[in-house]
Image 1 (cartoon, protein in one colour):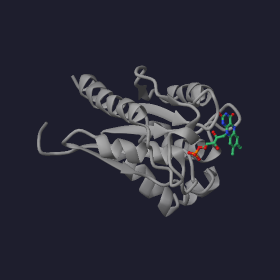
Image 2: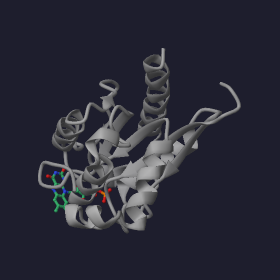
Image 3: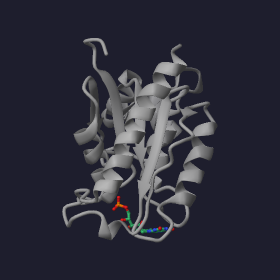
Length: 187
Ligand SMILES: Cc1cc2nc3c(=O)[nH]c(=O)nc-3n(C[C@H](O)[C@H](O)[C@H](O)COP(=O)(O)O)c2cc1C
């Protein structure tokens, strides 16, 4: 690893203070290999996408988010499952980052995805929906390993910190795979 850190932008698809998915990204920060920096973004201030607003000029939170996406070597998205799909806040942020199509910061980005839900299926359906969405602008999404954290209430404490060592090990493997995937894409 050289002196410039490998920069991963973590994107949680939840605004909840004690979010399990934010907790997965905090866990990723803990186990990131030396030379890998993971910044966790917050989507709370990003307004709903509106092309009229975009035409006048992007709001500051949108510009800042897009700059972070652009500067990142890779993205790590942690999504909850809402009604068998991804939450609107996550879709909205992705929509902004996919604009304009000719210079979209998220296009062709190496991306790994994971997700935690309180249900029995661990965001399987949301992750499939997310893969479909990311395919639209040619994001380079890591296929394996998959990380579906089900029954999340048993694996996180009340503040949303991951307490399950098996899941922590899987998060570590996913981060390592994302770095390797990005390096492979760069040849
Ligand atoms: C509107 C809504 C819809 C949901 N739909 C699903 C669902 O389809 N499948 C599922 O496993 N959990 C579902 N859940 C439960 C979420 O998985 C759970 O709230 C989870 O903790 C959200 O992630 P977070 O802790 O990162 O906020 C839903 C929750 C909400 C608020």
